[in-house]
Length: 126
Length: 109
Image (cartoon, one colour):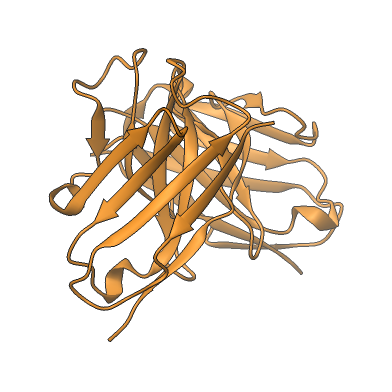
């Protein structure tokens, strides 16, 4: 059974950098059939896709990472295949970045999210 | 950029009743790339339906998805007490990638 577990900074000051890691067990992030994503949800609100790292199989995109255009200037995602985890960095955070952050696996054919982490709440406050 | 609009915002029903949730896309989309999720308080979302009509593993058959083009529907044939939750639709496309609807809350009447 695939499991994803988020870890990282949970309380930040405005202008700091958010850093989260998603540890994956029960499957390899090197699989070409899936992509690995970050999705966030502000308290009481809906879901917002941040970006994903993808491998071969996607037809829409070029390059290895793809980010939500609204966040692209502040987001960097990376992966460590040896440790089977992937990471998110979001720079210059503000209170608007306060949210539950989920890491997730995205199906390579249809783009649905079939596995989610339990989520980690990140709060930005002065 | 595709925008997904879900309606109604809140659906008040009793256990045993039928729930019909709507997801409308701002332009025609390929149904292969439409999914539905359930989220309960304090939990992450759970995949219910993928490819607009296919139930995910372990999802009861009282959940069904339908639709094409711009209009998609999630139907819960007979509400079980555990079905009261928030439901999101989602589309996968080239820009921006994954798009979610605003959600429909199904609450006990």
